[in-house]
Image 1 (cartoon, rainbow, N blue to C red):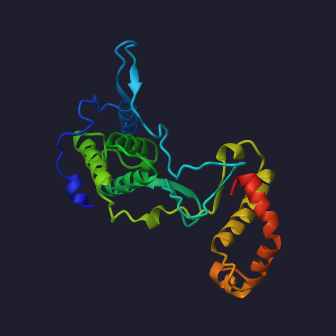
Image 2 (spheres, rainbow, N blue to C red):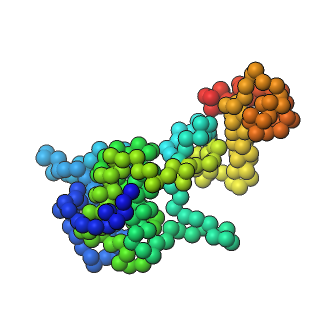
Image 3 (tube, helix red, strand yellow):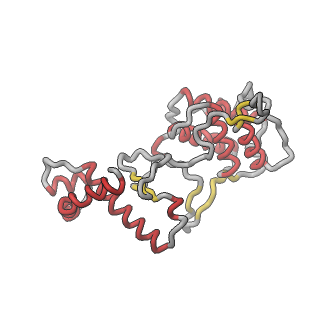
Length: 256
């Protein structure tokens, strides 16, 4: 994507007409713009504002999941994730921080590409989620990317280009979610650390089984399957030994 083209010019945008105020901090401003975009039009009878047809009212940062008995499994490796923090060398989490406008625009392009891949289909909703991203997930010095007419135009251009282009510069490798399984976060909120550990171990066990099941070739020997699946001969032997039981559990618990 030509970032220089995005940084130049304003033009007419979908955000035109939204009230601009520069008295608040930029995070509150972006949040305000997001809220303005939530409404489509006024109901002529009730005189209340109607929500526009939005797929995800809450901005999400990973592929939507359907949990069965508290688990979801990434069997085909198709999950995507957009990290909103990174780890320092000391292992401490830090929020995304940008010192330059160009870096913000590049990140917004990746974020819009991610939103498109998980199912966002309209220009307005892409802009809605970019505003949410700026309001909640980004740190930067004041004045780097305030909601000025120029920057609102940039959001509009990003949304337009993401909808008509595969955006090869925004590589999917960066967005790939390497997790093999995920536990329903709502369930994790209700259990203690010991139970969480038990649930994670259970998830690892089934994820390992499902990964081997996907690659296992009935026509190959134990050693050949070990190479195909990237595991040891003893792991393949255990897979064969426990297969009937694990298949029954996968069907009854997870519908897999």
